Image (tube, rainbow, N blue to C red):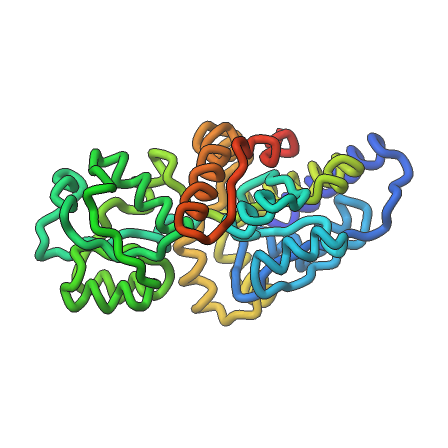
Length: 327
């Protein structure tokens, strides 16, 4: 079955579900926040207006510069759904009272956020305890820092015995290449430079297997979720169908996704190669909305407070995570 036929079938069924469940819709349009130059599988449905057809309303896709801007727009009522919002902006937002709910995982990219050990150190995940007493470069108070702590704990390393040095990715790459640190943790292009002298302590796949994840999320406002639950559910159903169709035939979707992201096809291919789009059933599992995300939200919040990047964290973040729209 082609991507277009699959999405059309889901759209028809979803529209029937929404109209039968809600009768006359109370709204005629919704606004969804997204990022340019961030290609995702659902953009085929975005371009072909599959979302509009399935939801029975006009869907306006509004580009934002960062996740904090998305949160502000949602709090003000200008945006109903944020697609591929960054995890940290969500943590900061709900910690400060933003009425948001995390309803799904938009994209994973564990291979784009790693800790690289110098090859000449002789350190691997099997003897990671040797990092105790050594310098490790990492940005402090964010997801990368939290993942480092989780990784060290998983490998039996006492993090309090590791000399963590605050460095942004570009500086961490320089320090690792010069040999100033035994390991550098970073994300994005800095990893390519780090790989010239080292290898990951744990690969992204190895981290994800034990619930140490890197991802962007789908968030909605509490009001929208409460007043239009069927629209949220249908939005997630169309997204699921788009993800499945993309994974079945990524080549046919490339040009459409590249156009929607505002990128050339080579750059789009390179980015998508490191992206994952977990199924709804996987998202409801223990590593994700079934418990892992709630634990990670609390962990990241506490790390940010300790680093001085946030005043305080909440005792429990589970009320802000809702997997019911994936069911």
